[in-house]
Figure 1 (cartoon, helix red, strand yellow):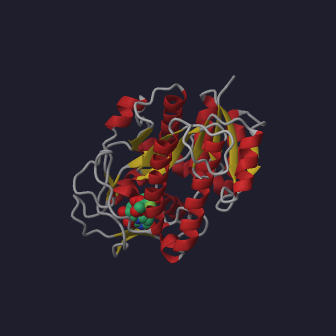
Figure 2: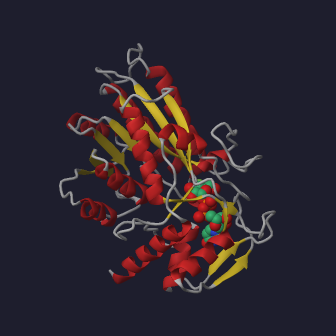
Length: 355
Ligand code: UFG
């Protein structure tokens, strides 16, 4: 029988791409989402792409522990990938308690219930933000984590720690204290640290759906190109980088989704070398904001209205991954080119405009 993977926050941008790749790799998927930051567009897209009308969708909030218990009572879950979280850096600075409550409570509920239901493999969606402004580039998993510069970033660090500590405490499944649990079992965990996920599925049926004005670069670019925004502001051109604009490691969302399938397989097939593991998920190649804008213009044959603007507070100058560990241990490598990715982002924006 196919193993079943719960995707919390599975109706969102990354969760929907991961659901597609899991189903295409032969897993059963249960999607759970409270739709607080998305609608059903991407979930409908997942069904279309995979030809699977029967994917269970549960509208629920992981902060509601009763709902999490009901979910684990109803489905036998072999692994869970946890995306359900708030993710806007600026909003987290304005509303820290909302972020800590939502992002921490939902994850703790999930682990507690999973532990109480015979144990589970837990994959946490972490972020390169845990490295802050790195002293050395590229960053490896051994690079030190830096103090978070936003509550959002802090929730990523704390959730990594919650997972690590739970794995250590519950690894045998027979620890003596079990909060609300009559069938305790071990937790194993992987944290994937994403660099900058961009692009959309090649079908253009799923992609990023920012609410309001996008914070992130690529949705702002595509919305400017389609005419929804007048002009892209490039935040800072006086950074100590080759062209003065910030450098990032932009990872195609389909490549990123595939990394999850490799990580889930590693957990389910008992291939983990430690019960808690961390992997960088990036391309290993830095790209500056200006290089990305130029590549977008070139591959899509258009000219973008942009101007240089002051630096954005909180931005790191440059960060990119050393993805060697993921390449070697997960057997995964980013494959899509920047051109393919930027063409897919534009195709998705046009698809939205046609709707
Ligand atoms: N940028 C612009 N103009 C824009 C938007 C972004 O010039 O309108 C620049 C930023 O200054 C930055 C680069 O594009 O140099 C990338 O910015 P994004 O907002 O797309 O991505 P970040 O690297 O800032 O964000 C990432 C993750 C977040 C994470 C954050 C931590 O997407 O989840 O790093 O700083 F929290």
